[in-house]
Image (cartoon, one colour):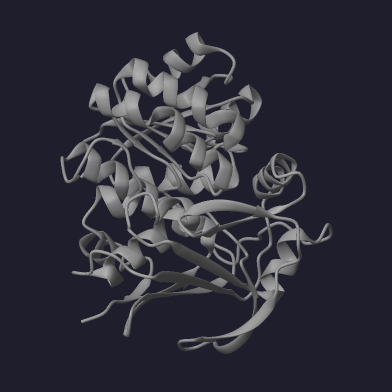
Length: 342
């Protein structure tokens, strides 16, 4: 896999971008380091031996140079409200697949709204939210659906033992809050809705090893864009353990710190996805370590499958629409523990 194909990583020097660069190298690809900060790119190039190509989102010619000769581009630079559209435009000009790791709800919705027709007409592949938030829940829900053609509701519950945010997470969150006017977003009755009330707390029975935990109901993540983009489910609800929700917004929360030589932190997670259709209930579960590090194999596996023709459509598509969800999740077993319905 990889066959020494070049893959441009925009935002290569960021926290998640570095994991993506290393995963590409491990899988036999040649990362091309791109981004807005030339000094950070040079430092990363000196440490890794890969080529650095500085490019700003307001410089189309620079972006074209960053993608020259690449087989695909992975955008790991947030806030994606600022970077997604320019990098997608560059990918369309270059005729290469685009994958990003955006967790920003509005940015992902914009990608579907603004590029669906153009990408489809060009026969291009554009994959937003190919990350822990957005892709993993979508893949689990798609696998849980199985032969169901529709469902009444989907619940995606996250149990994180902590959530120490990166600088990129903080910046993306600030942009999203500004776009929402301080409100919050939910997916109900088949569409995104904005509310200004406080979300309720409830309890969720997570599978091992977590158990029953207090969660914030409607702690909405990118799953409310990815799941409904291809699954007939009018109600998509997401939940987050209270401690992790407090961590990510607390101004004094530390950034992630590597707990070992692979750079991963000691953060652990369980994702519990429940799909309900009438009296039928199906569950899919994933467990693992470090939500930022796990994003890298998700994005790189997506690129590998796109470049080797293991896809189901073209245009703008979420992970669950584009790939065989069960097969994709099984391919990640070196990184996450997955339990799927029989």
